[in-house]
Length: 372
Image (cartoon, rainbow, N blue to C red; front, top):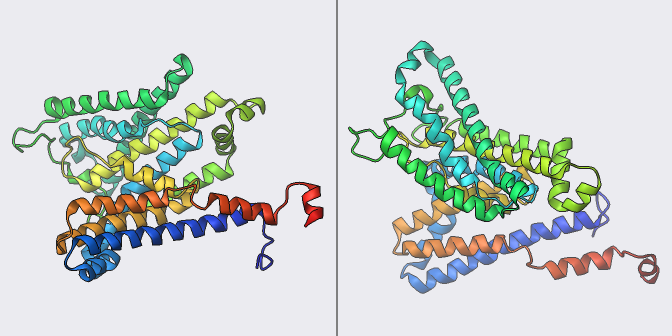
């Protein structure tokens, strides 16, 4: 069966088995969710119907699926860039909230500046300026953990976790003392001017040009990783740092540059997301964990991020829809989504069967090939 089309190789066989593993994981995860539904609700058929096709029932729910995709695309790209060089830093969480906090402050506090450049051109200039400034802030922050690791040998996971706490307290203080709007009655900033909000693409929803930017970033990230010298060096550094160093690749420099790029994307995502979703800045910009999940599902292929983000956002919306229309408790929704996510992230599922099939079809020694 492997002789049709392109010649089968070990890599192609591994990819086919990987696709089957993902499909099997999704099916098993959904079946486990269905079993839980039968155990906890008196209306299992109705709940299952909402679970499988809830978002397709209304226009607003499908728009909500696309809304939730928007930040996942950019934060997924950021996570994949960070992971490709073997940098397990969690500092992107700080980049997402710190960049929009510092960038939106001058925008909010100086609204009179927007009258100088009216119309759509003014929106483009201000949005571009804000996003570039956010990328610079994100890149600067994301370089801190690898710099500490390079200079002092600090573990990047511990360093980034501590920095996340420090920056989250700083953002909270900044909002309360610098951006605080007394008239709102909330711990939030003044409203964003309409001149800086991205253009909406779907009427009655918060789907903006951010979805197009996210898709473009997935393509750019793929091109960077697989069609540029720096991207190839980054993959070598992540796969085997010792071999990359012996090959003449500046391991520390490549790791630092790619980590900065990952932080720049995270900062960019934070600002664009808060301007798309929120009317004020309250210290929250985007959920970085969803982007991490999508990055794990898509493996090292950024072109699969749209598929992974659509699947995860669909799961989020359909779970909320089922909870709102049936007696399925909200806590079960978290359990169900966790089951499906864990099944998809189980890399070792069928690992032994895959390797045995590869050994059987692709022998590694001349003696093995002669004995076949």
